[in-house]
Length: 156
Image 1 (cartoon, one colour):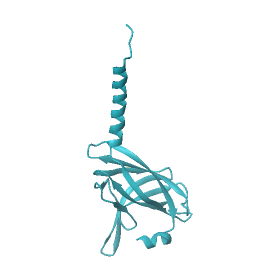
Image 2 (cartoon, one colour):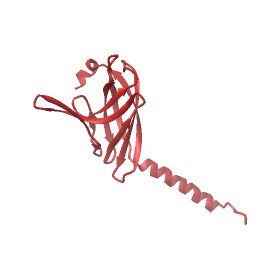
Image 3 (tube, rainbow, N blue to C red):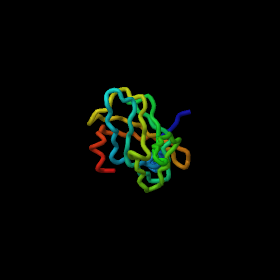
Image 4 (cartoon, rainbow, N blue to C red):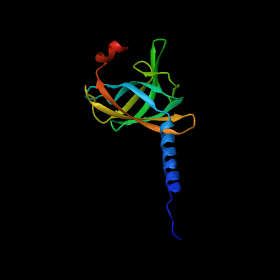
C-alpha cells in the first residue's frame, strides 16, 4: 500500500511542528542580569557567583553546575548575632516577575573545588537548572565575568 502525501497531511504535519514550537516557547524563560564571579587568589578553591534572575512564571532553581568547579551549590548566607552562617539550600524560589538578587551576604551560587583561579575578566560558564510548577525543567546557560570584590562593592 502506497502512502500518498496530501495537502491536508502536510498541513497537519506543519501544525504539529508549530504546536511543539509554541509549547517550547510558552515554557517559562528566566532573564539573567549582571552575572559575575568573585576573583580568587592562587590557592583559593572556592568562590561565589552572583546575578539577578527574573522568571516570567513561578519557578525555582534546583541545581547548578560549571566546568570551572568540582561542585556547584546554591547557598544562603546570613548573620546570626555576630556569626556568619552559610549553608546550602536545595532550591531557590523565583517568583513570577519579581527580580531575585544573588549577591554577597545573601543567596549566591557557590563554586567549590575550583579547577583554576578566577582572574579579573575570566568568563566562567554556569548552568542553572530551573523547575516550573508543572515539574518540567530547563537549563539556563550563564556566562559570569570574574570581578574583584572592590570593583563590585559600590553596587551592594
